[in-house]
Length: 213
Image (cartoon, rainbow, N blue to C red):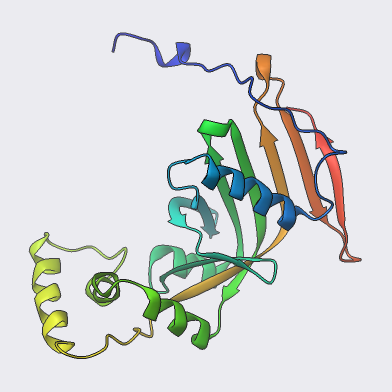
């Protein structure tokens, strides 16, 4: 390696984040920033790190946001996956969006629950057929001997649904995360970043405060 990892650094100078300029509702502020990310051609702006935990063990992975509905953040996955098992054990999760092109990140904490089956069915039908088939093929997070396991399963599932609509498997569907904390981070020079944190209060209103970087 020609350059030390410790020497890798970027100086953030593009924007600032002022408490008097943000929305009083963090969902509105999120949607505003998300629209900025889309308009700025950020690569996969809906990619988010999802952290789950169970029995003192924390796991993280990248999943895709598929909607913001009724103030909830929606994503879809295999309920029998490792993340699904951890969610069943501990419904408190965390999300992080990172958009380096804009020198921004958003951190979210909240409670998660499954969406209703109708909502999952509607989204599943909107997916490309190959993705629908894939939901049946993969025993997500389980150990497999080699790639041929998936190849053989693919042939079986394609044969099963040949000439027919692909049904949503019962083990696959959506989750809705209801946020209790949302933090907006804007990179600033000298690592003195702007951080505004919204915390949900018992009254249902949001408290906004600035955090030290």
